[in-house]
Image 1 (cartoon, helix red, strand yellow):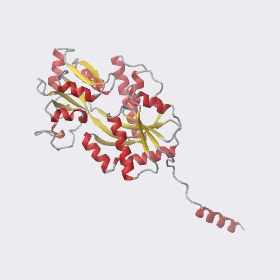
Image 2 (cartoon, one colour):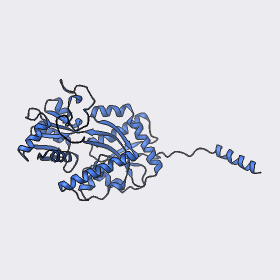
Image 3 (cartoon, helix red, strand yellow):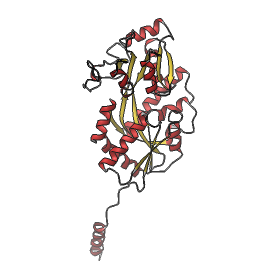
Image 4 (cartoon, one colour):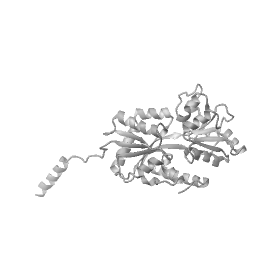
Length: 328
């Protein structure tokens, strides 16, 4: 009798269908922490396009833009959607840096880290016909004429100004930082010689470089960018030296392209989205996007991503406190 019962249980277990893996059952909303046409919007829509073309998800993906407050609007919205496993929030390091400098209706811990897919490099640019040909030239001018060299960037108390402050702290130079609405606007101001330099990702300054309206001084990376395709008649991205090569003793500075979910999303959903984004990062469409924007591929998830966030929070907290920006 016992043998019969055991055999019946085994037979029943083998006959039962495997537990279905979690998957979305309705359209997934990608909330882009930036305005239409900006870097975060392009990032979100590129992932959306890759998912659709490669048929990686059973439902559609829709992108909505909530770029108010340097992206805080998107993170507040995401924080208020706790447990909603059909929403993802796409942004940058502003997810954990904004609450350090501004009192907002969310904390970084209110969102669930999913993955980073790429990092933006930062290039220091100068006027095409200006006197600065290296980062050392710019630093020396910032030392001899404190507060006179006009250094532009996107927003205030954001990634661009943070980098300028790090350069100042490492060298003793002092620049006049001028915030603009976007990196693209800062690039236009540099091309018109209204500022002396700016820090920007490659994609937002490449048009002015190609047109001879700006020149790159150095890239804030551990290694030169890999792309050897000529952008101008004489230079490729790979021809731009690193700032460390030019004598600036400063660690690499990159901005991650990140994906978060609301808090309290089931672990099965986090795992599914992690797998989805890994597949996206390997598609030809996403690889072409990285090449066109001169971003560097870097896929981080799980403990690696969480450790990256924790280290950057600690580093940023120290700097923001020294600059008088810290509110939390």
